[in-house]
Image (cartoon, rainbow over the protein chains, first blue to last red):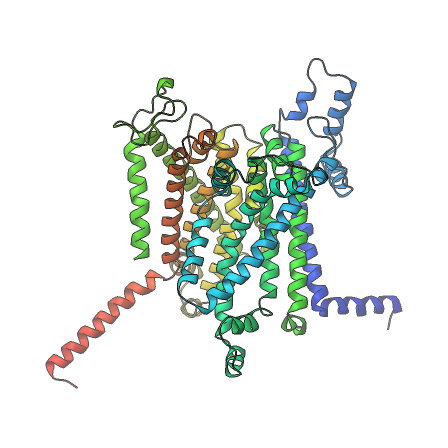
Amino acid sequence: MGCPISGLLIIKSEAIVYNPLMKRVLIRLLSVFITLFVLSLMVFLMIEGSLGDSSSLLLSEDAGEREIELYSQMRESGPFFVRYLSFLASFFSFDLGYSANGLLIAPMILSALRITLFISFSSVLISLVISLLWSLFASVRDGFSYRALEAFSIFISSLPSFVISLFLILVFSLKLRWFPTSGYVRIGDSFLGFLGSLFLPILVLALMHMSLMLRVFRSSFRSNLGSSYSLVLRSEGAKGVRLSFLTSFRESIPLIASLSADSLASSFSGSAVVESIFALPGVGSLLVSASLSRDFRLTGSILMVVAFLSSIFYLLSEFVAFLSDPRERRAR
Amino acid sequence: MRLRGGIIILGLILAFSFAFSFLEVGIDLSRSLSGASLTSPLGFDDLGRNYLVLLARGTLTSLFFSFISVSISFFLGTLLSLFLSLLKRGYELALSILDSVRMLPVTVVAIFLSSFFLLGELRIVISLVVVFTPMFTRISFLKLSEIRNREYILFLSKSRVSRSRVFFCHVVPHLWLSIRGAYGVYLSTSILLESTLSYLGLGLREERPSLGSIMANAKDYMLYRPSLLIYPTLIMLLISLSLYLISSSLGEFDSSLKRPLKGKLVNIAKFSSNRKARGES
């Protein structure tokens, strides 16, 4: 009995709970909100608690009206809770305020984000293609291909990205003179110059991603070769790389999705170093320069944007994993 | 074999850094970027400092601060996971909050945190501790749950042995055996992260050279003196390789189970040979 609307709500809520996709989406969305809440609180507390940050540099002896207005915008008054809510509201409306230099933060991050996302997506795409092909070959043979994969993977993961960047600059830019040592060329100015300026940064990030992808894909493909459906395919005449591809590719789509999301999120780490070395105007170099000048509002805003994007990447990877795996869809 | 190899490489690096780090570096601009000599087999840097001694000091600094930070994270993470495992409610929320920090790109978090502290030593330790504590908490919580569900622990819990005795005498000692492999992996990661922060100028102070700051100095002369870049890279590579070898071999077996089993097998073999010697069937 009871109100028909409440009955509808119950039916709807049951549909949500028993729909595995919706359940996953709700859990992941909840985790996105928890991440953003924890981070926003951390960033807010650190900005509030910090004394002598770069915003106070605006109030020098020759500070004009504009500097005083900017400073008052940075230092909001009122009770703690109200100030925190206003900080949160400004983040979600993408009104991130002003940096220590008096520039609007939101457009700064947006223009830098385009370059960082281009580098990140390109590096993940390149590393995925190479890792999948190499792992397919290495999964069917235990010889040179596998040993080369292991050695390459250990070698690259033992070095930080700045060391790889410096050696690539030394070889390709200073010795061979194929690419510029640093700097960014806009796509509108010269397409080849644009590709040349981004080639080495993309290569560094792709190598970093490949060190993880190669090992994971190879062990996944190898374990799939021992499965019962692989035996069926083998009995039908499939062998070698074809057998590995038929057995593993569809099975590996959730793995590919989750590794891609992980690599995209970690690209922000790599881009902070790589963009600083290659002098690219991306989010990473913006973060490093803001951190060196102790511009807490800008570093906090970048961290929150990066956290938000990373959570979105993980969310999308769960969608892909769910949609590509019928066992997940059937699970209730 | 791998464990021995890893320990030997790490031991050699430690011996090298301890042996040469106490020698005088000496700044002398007249010998700036000059080549190898008897007193300095690796040559001199731009400030005329003995590169061998500088490298030994940098290695020791990087190892020391990474070791301190990872050990603090390990201690805090294990303590936090022990506390969470004792809770009956609310641990999921605490874990999801820690997971939210763990999922963030580590270098970005470390750069963000290092901007808040002026003192180099403090900021590097705090940044690394904040990055690695959630990782240790998560992994030790998982291992703790797995150990508590092992058959002999369940058996002891059902018997008259007190809960605290089971926990501290049987569960906790096995925890270290399960997560020591992760300790090696995170130590290696923290050395790379520390050198990255020092390279970017967000790590240790300039007067305390680390591998990252040495390389930041060397990059300006890499075309004329690439060896200034190659030596620290080799050290970094060897440290990571040794820690990889150690952690991968430690993660493979549980020596607490292996040793008694080995002893038992020897006893069984002895018993069997004694029986044969006595002519028993």
